[in-house]
Length: 125
Ligand code: 5GP
Image (cartoon, rainbow, N blue to C red):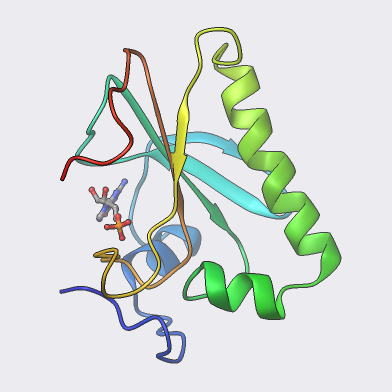
């Protein structure tokens, strides 16, 4: 079911459980501010999710309430994941769903990183 991005943070969401180590993930990178791991249902040859460690429902929540350090740490982590995977030259796509129209399913902010082939038009209509 799509997430209502105005809802309060639910600490039982699947990514909160991954952050607490209650559910395994295929980890790509971790630092003070973020965790990156492979999507369980990849939509491209490489499909990584990058999440902040803080409790934020969506991009809206994060951009409004996170500290400057959290925002800088998270944005730099997304860049580092792509750089470390050698994706700067071939290119990659970032996507963050926020709320009902976007069909966000997990109510913890996550940025999708897609790569590994030409990714086609931005939206499949
Ligand atoms: P959204 O639609 O919220 O932007 O994307 C949620 C993403 O989380 C989906 O691509 C889905 O495959 C992924 N996902 C859902 N549950 C799990 C899980 O337990 N582990 C991992 N690694 N990815 C998950």
